[in-house]
Image 1 (cartoon, helix red, strand yellow):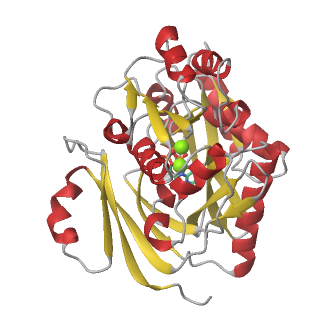
Image 2 (cartoon, helix red, strand yellow; image 1 turned 30 degrees about the vertical axis):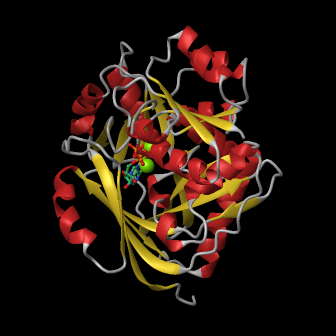
Length: 358
Ligand code: ATP
Ligand code: MG
Ligand code: MG
């Protein structure tokens, strides 16, 4: 049987490992941090940094394919791995989604709509002048975001007027940034798409996302969108998957506006807003991803239930005892010992009824 290597041992890696195990694959995890949630379900865990050439080579030589739950793996580490074993999704998918400027540039080049954006270098001698130019170009309000490594709304600062500029620049701690015009949206949706090694593309139905303190709070499926918007969401996902010659599952975050869909960002991996698929569809995003990277056929991801997925963040896990007794609630805990504020501890998907006929 095949052995699948996963870069990153967090909850996404854990759920990928569980799906892989169910299909009879062995899993090896590579994770710099101690006690990774995925380690418990993997055959082997390499606890070493991405600068450890020896560990990377041992990891890569023991697996048939490498995938990832985390897109910020340094390029040199990927070079070492790729010398020994294929990486799926491919390097272009990774590099484009590691940097917000490259991502927005790429999405624009393939004809998709993103928020107006401009680059800002907070460590330039005239950073204030650069920001002023960027504000003039994208308009206000705007959001200054670090180009790399941001997640859960971290590394972002909202700018409502020029007086907010200095504090926003300070938030970047010198890291290269991009200024984005604020998009007035009706709702946020996301589509989880998959492309197989045979180039087949299938998408899960879009979910509607609500954030709390910058962190995904709920995903509701179906999203309250019309058929044209749903078709547009699928078309956008398809365009990106084809343009990247992508193999695996991708999450595409979208804003629904009066003028149509605007792409917020893409994730070249399974996505938190796709966790509902465990309880609401005939195949889940984790199995779909493992199928794609292992060269198996994809499954038509038909949704059978209406669902609401809620993240359990920090102290939210205190309600686990109640949720455990709730009818129609599918609970998933990540096995993390300590419930720190803002830390994703688990999620619950509540089945709200059979899939409505739209
Ligand atoms: P994730 O955890 O999804 O990777 P992130 O840190 O990369 O989050 P974004 O997705 O860029 O952050 O932004 C987080 C949230 O902030 C968005 O889901 C949206 O609610 C809001 N937001 C971000 N950019 C914009 C924008 N240009 N206009 C309006 N709202 C925005
Ligand atoms: Mg992001
Ligand atoms: Mg996001």
